[in-house]
Length: 328
Image (cartoon, rainbow, N blue to C red):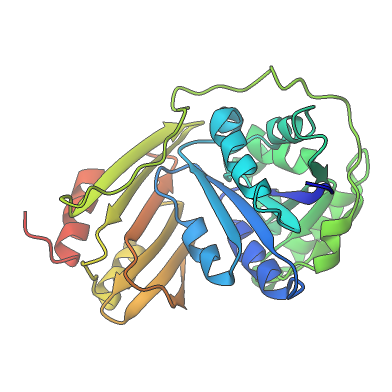
């Protein structure tokens, strides 16, 4: 490689719209540029990468926990694989439960200094969460915002005046001041923020990794041809996740699946599913179900739920298996 690759970390808590924002950036990128995206998800079933693959980006997924745990071998393997393809830009989306300082420490280490030009870290926040004790008392939530030079208040179309005031007050109170902040809706990030230079704060020792029991060397897996589906669970940082991967030969009833996701009380639901109407991406945050049609064909259906409470996974699995028309 003859030039460093401009790189941005795009962070933010669960359900804030990171994936939607990256999809919008990919749609508006210069047509002559090749971008790469490293996606890290708390759950064991990779879903965000499936949504991004339609935009022609180079995708590498690191599922199975927060990136502070996977900032070792899996993260390095993923970054190296993407850099070998000589992208014009690299975007990194840590899980909504991740610690961005540890990712920054890895990217600014001697290993990547010749290859990565780390730009400003961008943190998305739902302004409504800045008035919610559940979020403002969460250390990860605060770490993500504290590590970023650029703050984007997303979902402004769903906010009221008090939410906007809370966002503006929060930005005003920050020391050191943030380089840039903006209120947007539906993840419409201005492309130019990717070129904002980062501040160089006190050094973060990459050896001071934050470890969890769920960290694994290579958590990725494939569905065995003889298996109709597989289930994987994860837990850590006060959250539980459960995900399913269903064979491409199974199709779910769209209406039934939409009703199921609408009724579930999980804090976060993501899915890319083959239905009787075609392939669709489902995204559930704060009880709102959004749906986007996808052009994927022959794709394995992926469903992931995250909640701060342990949910009746087996009961839910029985429902999904029935909706998929699988006989056990």
